[in-house]
Length: 315
Ligand SMILES: Cc1cc2nc3c(=O)[nH]c(=O)nc-3n(C[C@H](O)[C@H](O)[C@H](O)COP(=O)(O)OP(=O)(O)OC[C@H]3O[C@@H](n4cnc5c(N)ncnc54)[C@H](O)[C@@H]3O)c2cc1C
Image 1 (cartoon, rainbow, N blue to C red):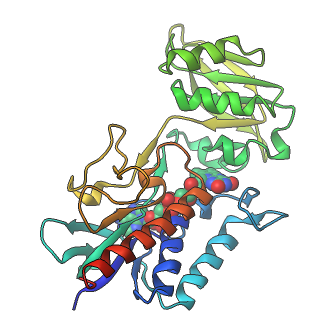
Image 2: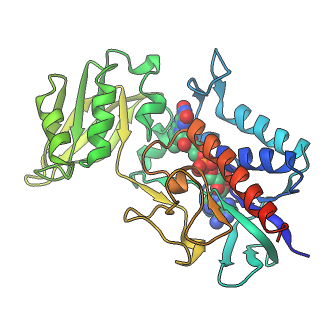
């Protein structure tokens, strides 16, 4: 028998979708993921304190927040499998979903909430200091006390890097944009803003050779791409702004994607290019990429799926 709704992904978007769908008696089956695009619970599982999720006036740890969402989804009858989805077939109805466990499941509707993976520098010392001064999200971590009035680096040269630098300029004493080329990829207006900003300095033709420090990040050893010279930049924080990769490989090109590789949804809805398939959270969100917006769009996807299923007599 076909599932009414399968949800793929267990970050804030997938679990919020599950809470709404389960409370609407859709008895959703949720694939939590395992390792294909992050870990069960999603990106917040690798961060420490979240200070901007409403309802937690003193902040909440990422793991505690996600454990709470998971329990809430289970409480209303969501069934969960801690497996990755390997492939889907959206060409026939019911849709089919094949997991790494080797089983294939049928579903009348799907919610894709597999998130996006922040690209990180493939440097050994990056792993050591990630979460100890290195972050992949300025909006999330920039306001932490550890960065206040301290020099901070942003690594990258696109719009995201400049946006992160502008955001961080509210907190840090100096913001160094480290860019491997001699010109930014960012749009002209963003470049102008960065160049005109008193606190922002662009270090051209530089790549990160190593992150250094004791327990917390203390600096970055840089290498000049033209001369090969190395130098030490003292910083308390480093924000990697080298892009995100939406977790869509398992879709095998069956859904329309945006130019940047995110799942296309019809404006104002979570409806994808295939009827009955909905997308929520970072996998369809190039712009905001926050836990609260992911949860919000998870709610939208569950309501959209519920309406769609009801209009069709459930399957
Ligand atoms: C270091 C860091 C700190 C952050 N701090 C904050 C913060 O303080 N505040 C804030 O609002 N936001 C923060 N964010 C952003 C926030 O984590 C994301 O916006 C949010 O987690 C997106 O939720 P999501 O449900 O769309 O995806 P994710 O949380 O990425 O979850 C995706 C889920 O999909 C699963 N998955 C992927 N591929 C498959 C597959 N093939 N099969 C099955 N499952 C799959 C994964 O296992 C995971 O469970 C931070 C992000 C990072 C990286």
